[in-house]
Image 1 (spheres, chains in turn blue, brown, purple):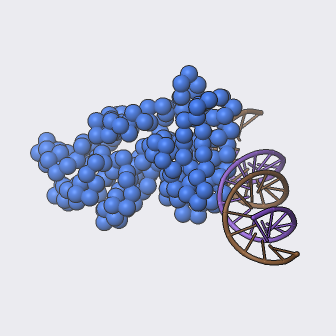
Image 2 (cartoon, rainbow, N blue to C red):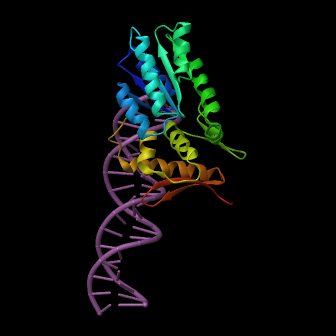
Image 3 (spheres, rainbow, N blue to C red):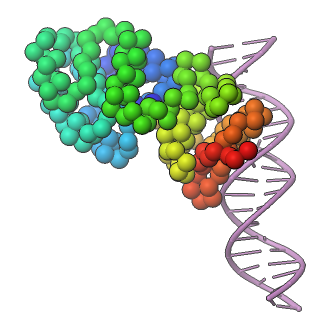
Length: 223
DNA sequence: AATTCGCAAGTCGGGATCTC
DNA sequence: GAGATCCCGACTTGCGAATT
């Protein structure tokens, strides 16, 4: 999943970021809601997680949720706060949040809830990604199963969500190495090469194709 | 110790340009 | 127009560093 984590240097952000990365998500972290709004208009995220300040200003959190929902209508929007009274939770839901969590957050529950909400909001995308298993880092196609590394997994996820359309190189780089702006472009070639040979060695009926001057695409092969 | 990752170097193929 | 050459992007391999 492509996740935008917005947190104003909250101590929990480190923990959440680490857990999300270990769960094989592609996470972009920003510390300002205004930057988050800009990022959400520039790129299609699956989930936006808004970590409120400590102590939480409920009114401000609600305003932030409303602004984010205004620019990202199809995204799963989650708010995490110190304290969520029933009336706060209700207000957040009315303003467009899909769920509100109170600290401390159980990551396992948080992760499962995210997946469930994505399934409801974007069933087609969820179906495309169903070939991937984040827990075991495997890709399944027909009767074949392919064990992937974390980077290979993220590249595969990025390609699968595009269907058979070509994914630009810069999009792939941002997806696989989120938050890093000094990625050597040849690293993507290297990753693609290893992913391709892994798929081919298992005889899978999909091919990783380089699209000159654009990027890569994943296509079904006849044989 | 095994796995993963990334850098460096080399190969390959296709397109562009030049020369005849 | 055809062949030769050059260049660039894609791909592969080897190896060492970092991580688990």
